[in-house]
Image (cartoon, rainbow, N blue to C red; front, side, top):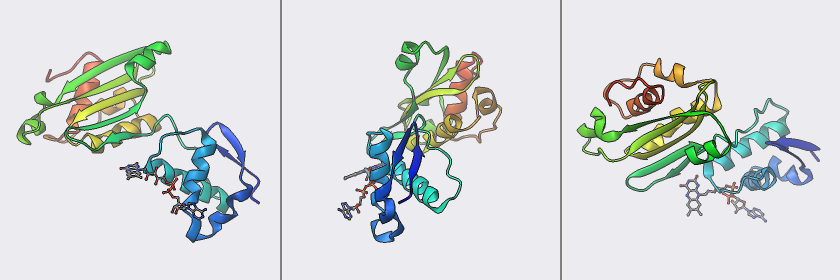
Length: 190
Ligand SMILES: Cc1cc2nc3c(=O)[nH]c(=O)nc-3n(C[C@H](O)[C@H](O)[C@H](O)COP(=O)(O)OP(=O)(O)OC[C@H]3O[C@@H](n4cnc5c(N)ncnc54)[C@H](O)[C@@H]3O)c2cc1C
């Protein structure tokens, strides 16, 4: 009924999407879109984004493409785990020139004050363009911290602009700035 939709790298027919007009069946949209995009990990935020994408397409509104390479993945255990983008291993396997930086939470004032100094932030930036290739975090509040790095992966925020963004002290978010400074070779607190 609605012709074809461009989703990620796939253009797919969505003749069955008339159901999306009914709020009763709106939940189906996420599953429907994901199957056709090739994305295989079931995550609520991906299903939500796909649902909005498809609904906007149906409504004829502007629908920015979903960045499947910038999906945050979180594990809500203790310590928390979060990541976005490529691992260092995968980046090197693809011959991407990278700079890697780390910041252990034990060197961070907020983590010490919170009595939760275990874990680290690891960031992987493109050596030449400064774009974020990937980030991997374990420790306090990292399932929230990953939002800053997902923003960097999705937008033009790069290593330089991130370290010139003033981060409040003491906060867990300072670990991202410190790790990025480490990647660029001028960490202050390590
Ligand atoms: C226990 C559990 C915990 C989870 N925790 C997380 C988490 O912490 N974070 C996270 O990101 N993801 C989590 N997920 C995954 C997440 O819930 C799913 O990826 C997401 O809900 C998928 O959304 P969806 O719209 O594609 O499908 P669904 O949410 O499954 O929605 C599909 C809807 O379609 C309806 N439906 C199915 N068949 C028909 C039919 N024939 N006719 C009419 N209606 C139909 C269903 O009743 C349902 O309402 C969890 C999943 C489970 C099961």
